[in-house]
Amino acid sequence: MTKKELREKYKLKRQSLSLVQLDDFSIAIANNVLKLPIWDLSFYHIFLSITEQKEVDTDFILNILAGKDKNIIVSKSDFKTLEMTNILLTDATKLKINAHHIPEPIDGIEITTNKIDVVFVPLLAFNNKGHRIGYGKGFYDRFLNNCRKNTIKIGLSFFEHEEKFHDISIHDIPLNYCITPNTIYNFE
Image 1 (spheres, rainbow, N blue to C red):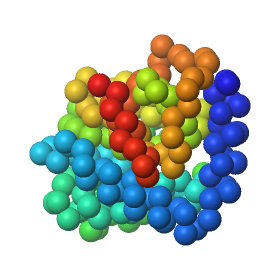
Image 2: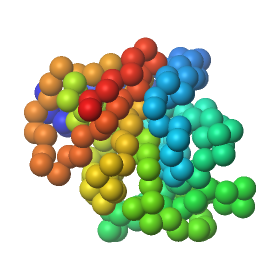
Image 3: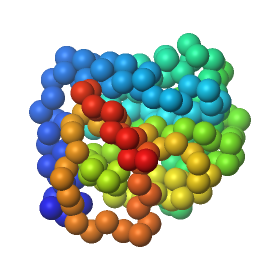
Image 4: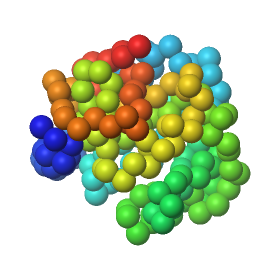
């Protein structure tokens, strides 16, 4: 299947999930994240879930990160440049839903990409080699390309991997891990 076909397939699969399933699956994913060997690091970038897209609810992982006293970074998206600005999430950070329904900080302390140790990556689908399919704008591919080579990239998905998909680009940055409710995929 092509990326476009898989985007449509997984958007429909997500929309078919009940609110109870969304919560149960998101909690199971957060519990699996706890099993990863990532907890001795400092700076964790995480996406804030788009409710309308029925994304993995990252609030559970945010609570884990806060409980472990980690530096949490969230992004602000610029749809003109297709770049993200990384902002430290603090108690004083004010969030606003943008025109694309993405919760993001209004302002705050900017963190350079080279400080980020771990990135939790949103996705629609992924394959057994760690390649992901996002929404198609390339925000995360550009962002991950600017991260350090040893930055740990973790995808979060309600569904298991696709055997294969076509049209993988040389600009696609593979994941180190992908976490589903039932499986921890290690692509290293």
